[in-house]
Each structure stands twice: as C-alpha cells, then as structure tokens.
Image (cartoon, rainbow, N blue to C red; front, side, top):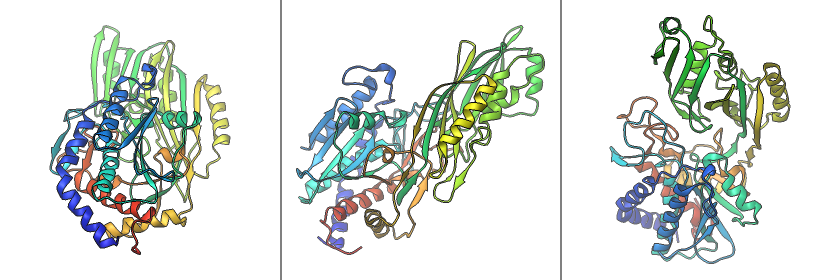
Length: 472
C-alpha cells in the first residue's frame, strides 16, 4: 500500500470517527484514576479507581473484538494480530491528583474552542484512546501486519512506574520494540535520570503545620503554613509581597496561605513553587523558631538544584531540575518529597554522597531514595530515522530528535522509544497563565494536534511493520 492511499484512508477514518474519539476520551477522563498504592488490594495494586479505569479501557478494546489481558492490575494489554513478533504502543491510565485552582471541573470534561479540558485529557488518556483507534483503523481497513500491534496500558506511571517494573520482574514479556506515547514529537532520544528522595527536616518549635502538594512530580500551586507568631509580625514580613493571605487563629497562632503557579516538575520555567515561596518569606521571623523553613528555602527555592549542590547540565539533555513537591508535618519534622531530573552525563552517585553530607550537617534525615538511570538511544538508529520520516511526512516539519527532563516508560521498558503526542500541548487563549498544562489546573488537549498524532502513529506502525511500501 503506498503512502497516498494510506493517507486517504486515514483522513476518511478521522472524518468518520472524530466525534466518537472525542466522546471516548471524555468517558475515560470521567474516571478519577489517581494511582494509590496505599489502597492496595489483590488485583487492584493502585486502588479501586485505577482498577475501574483499567477495566473500562480493556472492555472498550473487547467491545471491538480485540483480545485483551489483565496483568494482575499492574497493567493491561490489547492486541491486533496474532504474530509472536509485536510492535508495542504504551500509554498510562493513571493521572496526577487534580490539585487546586481549577476553573473547570477536573473530572467533568468539556470541549471548548477545539480543546478537551479535564485531568488526564492530555497526560495520558489521549494516548490510550489513540492506541484503541489505531487498532480500529487497522481492523476496519483489513490491514495485515507482519507484526502484531500490542497496546499496553500502565496504571502507575505518575507514581514511579512501579507498574511495568513489577510486570517485568514477574516475568512479563514486552515487545522487542515499542512506542511510548507520553512525550512530544518528534523522537525523544534522551531522557534525564530520576532521583526521588523523602526527607525529614527538623521543623522548629513554632511550626504547627506546613502542607503543600500531592505528588512529587508536580510543582505545588498552593501551600499552607500554621505558626505560633503575632499577627502583626506576620503581616510585617509580608509587606509588599503578593499572593499571600493571613488568617489569625487565636492570640498567638496564625495561618498563612500562599499561591504560586503549579506545573510539571520537569519543566520549571513559568512555575512558582508556593511552598518554597512561603518558606523563603518566613525562614527568619523575629522571635520565632522556624528553622525548617530556612533549610527548605535555601535548598529548594532554586528549581535547578543550586541549593542542593546538584546544579549541572550537558549538551544532550540540558539542565538538571529539582522540585520539592509534597510537604507535611510528621511529629517534630517536616516531611519533604523531592523530585530531581538529572542530565545523562551527571555523576549522580557522587552528587548524592555530597548531598547526604550536607543533610547530616543540618540534622536532616533521608528516609528513602530511589534513583532511575537516564535513557539514551543513538539519534541515528534506524528506528529513530523511520519514526522521524513519518513525522516529517505528516507535518512537513524538519525538527530533529530531542532530549527532555520528563521521565517516561522508556526508562524502564526495554526497546521502548518515546515519540509524541505532545504537539497537543498548545495552550488556549481562554485560560489564564498557569492553567492548561499536563500537571496543572485545567489540563487541556488540543484536538487537531491529537488527530494529527493519530496520522503520524498509523503511518509509523505501517512503516515499521512493512505495510507501507513507499519511501518517505
């Protein structure tokens, strides 16, 4: 089948199924599938909501006649074709918590001015729906591939990718090659490593409560601090500062609420961490012992790791990023969950040792640490070139493969390359600044970019499986 005939069939399929695809996505978005390992049950390792989402997605695949498998609730598979040789297509069904400051209801999706708005509409349920409709396109056009197409749907990508780690550790098999649909176009050939730590910071006697964030890989858009202090001294500290509210609790207790700009931890430009912002203002309030705030402001206010002693970059993957994403009080300590994305060439073990020495000198305890090694594939690899050619054929753009700080399943699944569909990240004019991003309030999906991604993916699958005999 030549390229022109494929393109005609894709255009006809989109014309016939466009509204149906949008409705399908909205049905998936309505399920609040936040991964919750603390709600573990047999068959539902990430809680009942993610279990419900996986059941729904696999049922929709079976509704159209596709064979499915449930891998103990960690992930699921659906197939088109029966060959032992497979091309994988990976998406995840879990979402980050909704967080504050939404204008629209996070789990009541709406379509407005060419966008779908709702938690998970972009990250990453849109990709899962694309996988289903790729199979439907192949089925309705009776296209026989040399490889089976296998859609794999994960359930805990946003909370550390335990889903596929566990699946693989238990002997699960994945395709020799696959596409991770959880990045941007064109091909992502390098991803920074991940460094996740849980810290216990001595809080100081006058901190009663300090809370912000819900997941470490999102910048907190709001934060709340309760301290023993005089209202007058608190208001004096805030003189000239914006985005703070003060609520006296009694004669010597004050609650302060700070507003920042949330977003994805891997992309700190344009965000403002409300918790570190709050700590920076109150790290040294006269007459108060708030010592934990001084450590937090000094170490985590800079989102590129300078305070941690981690600051570095390379030509392949750019700057290191750091995010203190979750804050809570635990006894005499402030618990801080930290997300660091480090460049491919970084000496992370040496950096970790130096940071541990810094912590020890401040009386801070590292309660847990998880290090994920970076991902890299030669941008001249044949599969990379094939995907690049399909991207260029559809878009007419000559963008080169790129590196990023976001972490995807490419880090943990052998043979998996991240490729789109992130051109859908265009921000609508009707949302204010700080809204619309993948982990922020009012997450959006740009519908036309999403449908363009469908074209790119179909062409890529056919090219990789030898069903497209044209030269792109």
